[in-house]
Image (cartoon, rainbow, N blue to C red; front, top):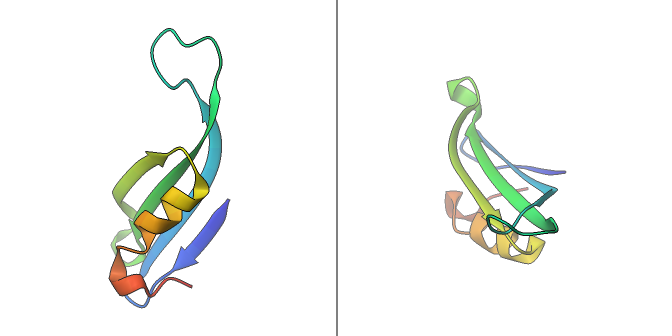
Amino acid sequence: MKEFHDNFGNTATIKEEQHFPYKGAKEKQNSFILTLTADYENDFVYFVSLYETENDAMNKLKSFSCNTWK
């Protein structure tokens, strides 16, 4: 799991997990879950999304918080 913090009191995580890509699929596939939380609001989850690649998740992360993630 990768964790990032921005300049506005938020935390982002990108976690790799395996999920079925659709109902009835025979095999799970790797996926990357991007989760954003507000540290100042008891870790309130305000965004969750699933991506096929880590690069896709990172690109979406860059669109939040003026890309101030570290």
